[in-house]
Length: 446
Image (cartoon, rainbow, N blue to C red; front, side):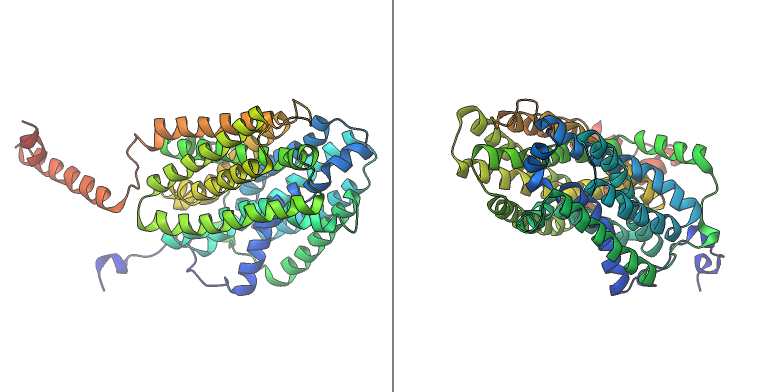
């Protein structure tokens, strides 16, 4: 037994071993918790024009229901994360799912667009509880590289759910209206509630719960946002997801209103994007692990720029449907490519603050998306140019942030060969200073 092995282990500092309590049933529940928030955001997108017509609302007002849900998803994660650290995962989760069911029913019976916007914020807030607790439970169950990969999978699942939601909504639109879709979401919440009660057991023991309160949480936030690499990864995530949610909010009016697609054809177009998202997200995860996180992120941003640029040109020159669809697939696939490396770069240095770090990633993702979504409707429903402008500006901002932070700055967790090289160089320099003679690195410079 080594000296290290003989040291006592502190329960609060040691994560649970992977696989203890993380069986297939729990894995499915965690996946559902991650997905049902984003699905709630965009399941009804195929019937958004019909919703606006029935409630006598303008295009921008109808899109505010998307924005309200996005802000609810953002704010809810900031609240639910610290609360679950203090009181455990299971009780806040049950409360959040019950609140989600109730707010979904209230959405279905909303008499006006104003009431619907308010209730949609509450619905998003409730959905955020599931997202952040799925992330926090992963921190309880996994450690090291498995923890990073787990968060990468959750991020891809959340993005995938945001894409396939309209596909499901388009098919449901053949048998019900927008009010029926919200009742369907209430039923989904009921299924998740039953699964949570039956499968989800508390993953955070009493001795590992936080007692620091608000001041402790704020200090963690300040520490994270002071890290240039973390902040860069968060901003890149926020901007590319702003483009994604602008697309989710505006594409329904562009494809149905301008190009004449039916709700079912619109759903098929989204299915094409779903395929691209899944394929390129899978490839990016493998490539980032084996090659270079920053290199994969650069490729994803390039794809986003090409796709958003195509949307801008298509809107400006009124190009045919095929150009728009190809541009959408390229941009959405590019967002999928950026997701695993940006998440890994953000979380690599903070395994003990992964829940708080993930909540900030979620805040950026949904808050930026909430800001971008209504901007697409400013020009009305008769032009696709606003969609091209918003997505192009958002992706360009992500590229600028990437160049200023992640590409130039040295990462704490760089690619393996470079990390080893820097570690050896620092060690050599330190030994040389202690010996009172110049290091090999200094001699080379001279």
